Image (cartoon, rainbow, N blue to C red; front, side, top):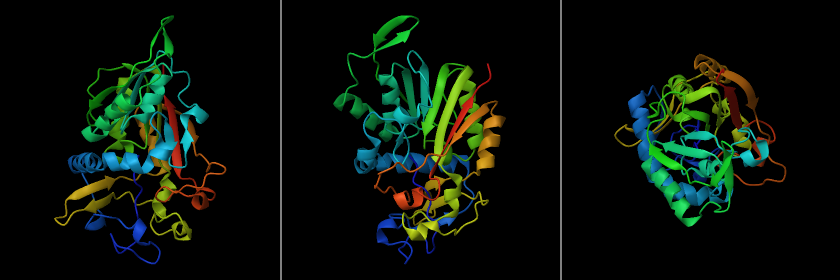
Length: 306
């Protein structure tokens, strides 16, 4: 799950529009500058390795242990049903984090592989498998026969270079994973398309692109446009030496559609979930105030032609 960018100067410090609790944190500086694939991947690996345990503790109440959450609003696959019937399906979650979504799919009868660039995040997933086992009595249909629920298999890799043969998965998905963190998201989608079987389904969610024009705060200050929506320059947090410690890459809605089509896929839906009625939590810049006015998450649904 990505941490959306903060656009407010001065970088890394509180301002009247950004109180201390929403400051950048340990980063020495925040920049907008070009970032290549190697630097971006390295920053993601180091960041999420360091944050894995704390991220789980901080967001557990919303993320859960075995739920597929599509966005910080608190919208779940159990409600949206974007992946369809998963029984007996071969499923890939790329950018899986601690693989809560993979565990949800496994409980539906899928055979799941969870990948992430961060070994620490995947170890958190393995810890969940030990601490909160999937239901032992569950079964799935595969070729007409039932079988026990299987925990996800875990593979550490860069999602832009998946170590799998062509056409080996029925379904691929990612909830705020991988796509915003790679320099070449078009190439990543081509790679995911490569491992999908004909007729296969891809679903992924990211921060809604319009959020990049707004400061990442949950109150009124987060409703004023402060940055160009059309500026694709990456958001970069840096240490004292100028080394990137956290990187996110912005694409417009049109960019995402072109990337999907360029990967040989057919866009079938674009879901912009509304803020859930009665939800009062905050997650970074996500809040009931902002969520009632502007979308926070974009979920893209696509098919590989048969």
